[in-house]
Length: 117
Length: 113
Image (cartoon, rainbow over all chains, first blue to last red; front, top):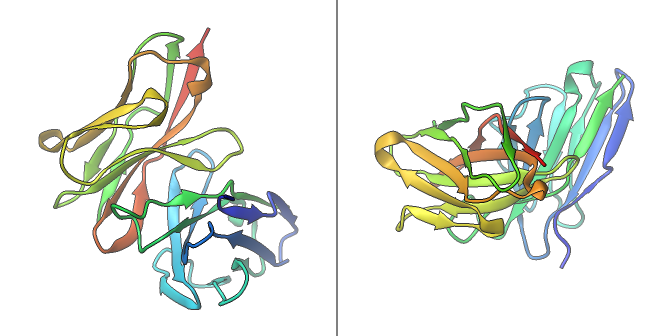
């Protein structure tokens, strides 16, 4: 019973390149959340998606960042024209129902650590 | 919107000693409260959660937490710490019908032999 799978685990990009982070939710989960963790800080909510829909992107930077969760395949967080400030750990979580809730806790992946050089 | 504060950035305890990690939240109604643990290079694992009912909740790995509405707190406790408990601990607060779960900045626990 695989958990939330994120890849790659580590990603290095030069300034100006694009970063694509992938997240496969737990089996049966159709709700996906992306969080960013900066050094010495907690997790900051970025976006919440259901299959094919963005439900809440209130934590997403207005430019260069986008997310999708297609009908088939993993959820993708895309960062265009990366800058050094984008260096962080990006975590994906999934839940069975809209969360957090009594029966829908969030399950986290191991994260993708993005380094921008 | 809800928010959460973890006053202690780093705590060191001896193995076998008791542990209490502090968490204070801000929310107008009864919040959803969580404690997660993160080992180095890993994701977050849910230790326990509180939604309603009994204010003392039991979690995995021998942890418990107590919801105190009067103090807006949800402190995590363990009677006897093991070396394997060394990790980063995050308190989080959520709200009904709100997808934005807010995390504290975390408390790093070091366990001395």
